[in-house]
Image 1: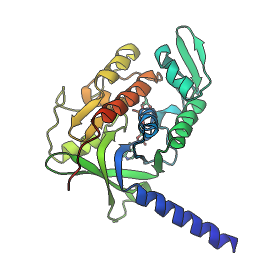
Image 2 (image 1 turned 135 degrees about the horizontal axis):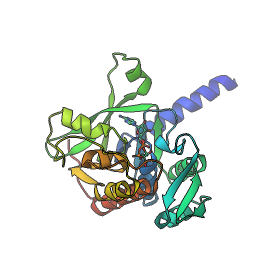
Image 3 (image 1 turned 90 degrees about the vertical axis):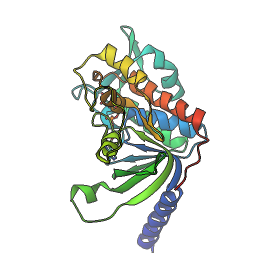
Image 4 (image 1 turned 90 degrees about the horizontal axis):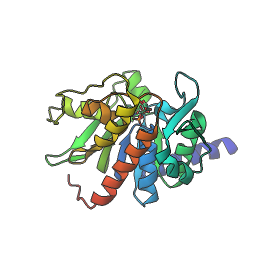
Amino acid sequence: MWDLEISKIIVEEFTEKLKKSLDVDVAIVGGGPSALAASYVLSKNGFNVIIFEEKNEPGGGTWGGGMLFNELVVEEDVEWFLEELDMKYKKTKGFISIDSVHFASALLYNSTKVGTKIFNNVFVEDVLMSKERINGVVINWAPVIRQRLHVDPITVKAKYVIDGTGHPASVVNMVIDRNLSIDLPLGKIREFPMNAKEGEKFVLENTKEILPGLLVMGMAAVSVGGGPRMGPIFGGMLKSGIKIANIIIENIDVEVKG
Ligand code: 48F
């Protein structure tokens, strides 16, 4: 009976995928452009990478371009990355312009093609931590959280957790809520008004490991560092993801205990 077979395939394959994802090298929270760039580089280099995205559609703030004009801009120095991902784009006025739907889908396609597993509709509600470091994340179905159902989560162990949650820097906020002191330059998570040129520089400078096992990238790095937002220019997001991937590639030999 087809209907039964179809259901069995879905349940068995998903279970298999989730089982393999319970103990990983890198868990990324949020499925925006920085996450997709980071996961592409990490997976391509043989790391076991998962992304948890609370929405049905991963891609974060890419799909709508600027004010729903579905076109976005990157700097010319990321052209090599667009080429590597086989994207179509146009050089204009010293920048590169790309259809935002094409950009989002190319990132998603390439990241998953090299092995990243994306779990959509999954909300990261907490972190796993020992005295020494952040050891993973605590997950639940996003609809469970939205409906405020009284259902316990499950945990995922990871050598590194990356906060790729964009403007709210949700993971860093969770850690602060747990009373762990993080050295925030402004003493709190804060973003400044739009300034594309400064913001693009700032995001890269503030992309780093902020606690053992916890790294920040993309807009989360800007909010944590206290810098200006930059709107619909996305080169900094790609470069931030690539930078965080390279930081991890150079340090991955950590032993995760607990
Ligand atoms: O905000 P977002 O696109 O992250 P990003 O990679 O890129 C920022 C740009 O889109 C844009 C910008 C560029 O100039 O300013 O804003 O920093 O994507 C973040 C994703 O994280 C998800 C959220 O739904 C979004 O898709 N997210 C946030 N908190 C959680 C989460 C959570 N606790 N669990 C799972 N997903």
